[in-house]
Amino acid sequence: MDIKGINWYPGHMAKAKRLIAENLKQIDIVAEIIDARIPKSSQNPDFDNLLMEKPRIIILNKSDLADANISRQWINKYEKKGTVAILTDCKSGNGLNEFAVKIREVIAQKLIRRENRGIGGMSIKVMIVGVPNSGKSSLINRLAKGKKAKVEDRPGVTKGKQWISVEGGIDLLDMPGILWPKIENPISSLNLAVTGAIRDDITDIEYLAGYLLNELNINYKQLIASRYKLGDTENLEGHSLLKRVAKNRGFLLTKGEFDIERASKIVLDEFRGGKIGRITLEKP
Image (tube, rainbow, N blue to C red; front, top):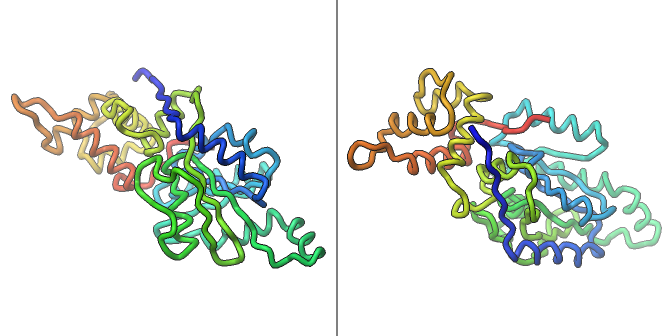
């Protein structure tokens, strides 16, 4: 199928970008939250310049929804580059016990210097950044052992900065999720959209669901065949796959036409909720 990209950069994201820059001086280290299902697409390229030389760790969140074998490959890739990265799942709390350990590991020399100056008891200030809907607020709430940051399953909920104290002498600064002004790679924009980082109301959801099914028919054929009783999908692409989903689920409009819009919403919702299976759309 033909690929067409999406761009979404509302005014509050430009404001959030300035907010990050303004608060960097008081930060010891940055934790960048990315979506384990799309590690490449969910890493904001603007952060490399924006965060300057600040120490950083990468957190591959929503790992419960991602393909475990591919997630391990991503961790190995980061390790080879000398980048500290961990897998986390905010629903179960898996991986979160590594957070404070890795933070202290990355800034160990700075902490030693503080001890030598007699200020070792100072809290470690961590800025939390990421694209919208990457699970930043959910991760913070897990670390804080209670709902301290506002959470919704849609992008753009955190609009201003929030400080939250957690165990281990760490203060977290939650920043709003931001994208970048022009997403050059159309595949990246579609990956961001199917995982919910770009709002559904600015996308063509039928095209989006067709793109997703097309990708899954290449790499996770058995999962979608099982979930939607699709049968042989060898020569089917996006819209044809959606039509078969609508037919098998009994999604009909008047005059016997298939309700493709309803099928599209179902496919996207079930992918995002992990109901199709553990899926990663990008390999290292």
